[in-house]
Image (tube, rainbow, N blue to C red; front, side, top):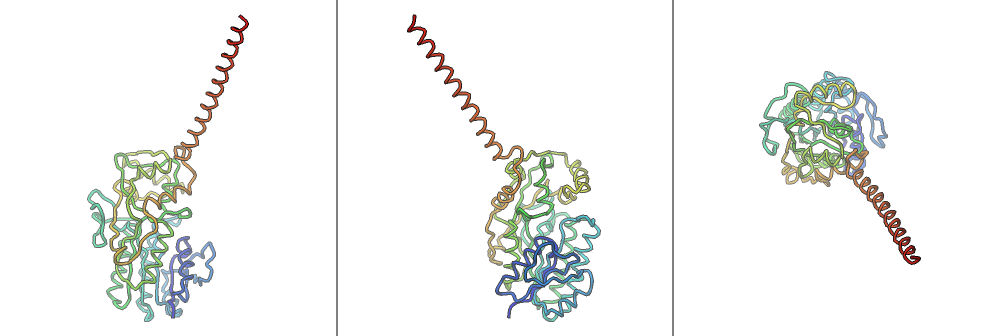
Length: 360
């Protein structure tokens, strides 16, 4: 008998893609996608969509009626979106509380997987070189997504204590990048000119979007509980990333990045929250030993390879390697043409003087 899996957050692209991928697994009987207030924009294939708000207690009826044995919670949002910060917090925190209350009542539930984020560690000048899963943020977040994800993880830990019979797996994933990924980080790197914090060059880790989906599937089908950092191997400095995009950097003093981010957020260009500004200053490094040795997952791309694939999907920046090479080729061609003309002119002049000397 295969699993019956409920996936939250399928209105977003990554949630929809994951639900479809999981439905194709021979270890899964049914995937109930959705539990979302908005229907998915793309095809769900064989996934059953249930239009429901996880903030509403009716979600318990769905879990009980469908005999769900596995829940994958993917609807914790890193960005407020058009609905604003208050609505995002309601969905993230209140929605998780209601979902866990529904899971608490279900006698069929065996496994709960939370797609969390490495943002739970925050970013500060006091951070260690690498965060392990047993560490906490060095500075508590007062507002924003970092505070949301910390609260969400706290509620999930409480659920694990109340239901020790349920395996609880928390995946703290690094920023995912891919051609179709629409996250604050991806939007930041798509800017034609990239603002940075003057005097800082943070370390960053990335996860290819297909590796992200594979990691969640691996955790869903494995009988392994615990908390795991998920990221591609290695780190990339922000300056290296910007150079590889071929986009000019715009170094700004720290106090100016926030107001610029607010203006860009209001214009719908990119989302710069307070914690993202801190991340652009201090970065973050995470240790992925447990991912490999305990969970048994190995991403197919390193941080550098994940970023390279993302960069290749973008229009080359004005100082990108591709454009520089094209310019070099054009210049070399022009110079080569000029040399050819000069050689022909010299040969012609030499021929004329020889001819004149013969007559002389």
